[in-house]
Every structure is written in structure tokens, then in C-alpha cells.
Image 1 (cartoon, rainbow, N blue to C red):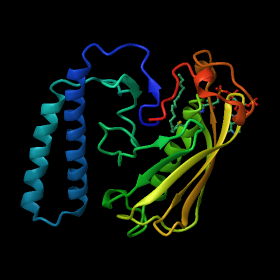
Image 2: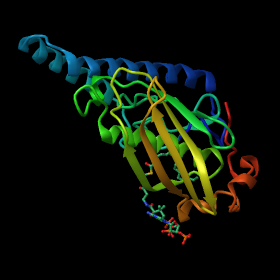
Image 3: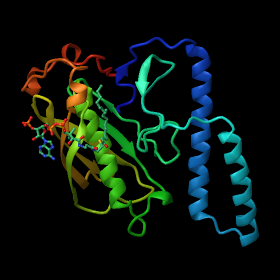
Image 4: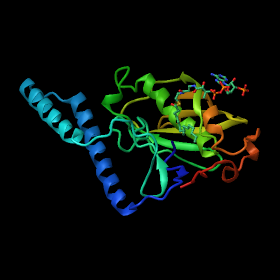
Length: 238
Ligand SMILES: CCCCCCCC/C=C\CCCCCCCC(=O)SCCNC(=O)CCNC(=O)[C@H](O)C(C)(C)COP(=O)(O)OP(=O)(O)OC[C@H]1O[C@@H](n2cnc3c(N)ncnc32)[C@H](O)[C@@H]1OP(=O)(O)O
């Protein structure tokens, strides 16, 4: 999901208290990202590795003292938006997520900056190709959502033009190519600091049948789409 693209249908009971909780959740996830990175790169001795593993398991038990059994799904947040905090690309609560901050315009032109570390290595020094595709899936997939057509990926054809280098700031973009009813074809790319395309994707996103009744009547022309008219929960551009 784009960063808070959809308004929550129900008001949050105590947004101030929730904001404090979100701050703590985000900080926990960020500290775990640091832990994952340290886990991959550490060269400490075996005794230290074993001791840390034990300590981490103790910490895990503290978190499981009160935990839900289901995944997070989509939740209302303190700012009155809907977010998928468990998402492995954008999820604020998910240490696996970089996390990407995807922003966009009402016409579905999306962008995010990307700089991945050692935990995402595929070829030596480079981002794993599955991760590259996942990043493109997320950013390109947020374009249909932005114009009120939040769809599932039907296909994502990814071309890898050059290695995407770890520890380097890249720009990821996504945009709408064509809207055909509930089907949206969108494209995107990742560019290195020199502006060279490292990977690009051509994808189709389809609003699943079970979701269509919650959204407005589709139009067949991207140029004619007004997100405010078509989305049940109008996408925000902020
Ligand atoms: C309140 C609304 C909530 C909706 C959900 C929103 C969530 C997203 C929100 C925010 C986006 C943020 C970004 C996300 C990024 C990450 C996305 C992912 O990781 S998605 C996980 C991976 N993808 C799957 O798991 C899909 C699995 N496949 C399916 O569920 C179905 O096959 C689906 C939805 C793609 C289509 O199924 P059908 O039952 O709804 O509809 P049928 O009739 O089969 O297809 C509709 C049309 O699409 C074409 N179509 C379907 N698949 C195609 C394909 N692979 N190639 C070409 N056309 C295809 C068909 O030919 C048909 O076309 P004709 O209407 O006849 O013109």
C-alpha cells in the first residue's frame, strides 16, 4: 500500500495513545533491522554468538507474552489512514521491510528511494533479484491503488538491466500505462545515482472480484479517472 493512501472508514478511539504505540512499534522494528544487519555482518567469537542467540530468544518470549495469532492485515492508524504495517516492503512494524516510503500523485505516478544493506544480498555486493522484483511489485502496484484501483498482481515481468548495488541510493518509480475496467497495466523502474535503469517491470494489477463491490464503477480510460469519484476511500496525495 502507498503510505497511508486510504482513509480509515472508522475513527480511531484514542489517536494520541495509538501514536505513542506506533512510535514504540516503529522503534522496535528499526532496532531489529539493525540487529538483522549486525547478524549478517558480525565477526564476533563463537561464545558471543551463542550468548546473543540466547538473549534474543529471551527477548522474543517477552514479545510473545501478548501477541495476536493472525497476521496484521490492514489497520487504522493514528492519523486516520489505513496502513499495512506487516507488509515486507513498506511495513513500519516489519523488520524485513527496508521499509520503503512510497509517495505519489493522484494520477498514479509513484516514487520511493531505495538503499539496501547486507541482508538483501544476492550476487556479491548486489541486491537479490527476488528483492528487486518485490520492490518493483510494491511501488508499481501502488500506482493502481493511488487511482482507486487497489489490485492484486496478475503478472509482473521484470527485466534486470544492470546490478542494483547494495548501500547505494536508488530511485524507484511506478506509473500507470493503461486502465481497462478493473485491470490496470502499470510500469516502473529502478535507477542508480547516475540515472541508469538497473531493473524495470511491466505489470498487470487486477481488482479481485470479491473487492469490486467496495469500489466505484470502473472506467476504461486512465485519463478520465478521477480518484475522488472512483475510490470508496479516496487516496491521499500526502
Ligand atoms: C478493498 C479492496 C482491496 C483489494 C485488495 C487490495 C490489496 C492491494 C492494495 C494496495 C496495493 C499496494 C501495492 C501492492 C503490491 C503487492 C501486490 C501483491 O503482492 S499481490 C499478491 C500476488 N498476487 C496474487 O496473489 C494474485 C493471485 N491471483 C488472483 O487473486 C486472481 O487471479 C486475480 C485477482 C488476479 C484475478 O482473479 P478474479 O477472479 O478477480 O478475476 P478474473 O476473471 O480471473 O480476471 C479478471 C480479468 O483479469 C484478467 N487476468 C487475470 N489474470 C491475468 C494474467 N495473469 N494475465 C493477463 N490477464 C489476466 C482476466 O483475463 C480477466 O480479464 P477480462 O475481465 O476477462 O478482460
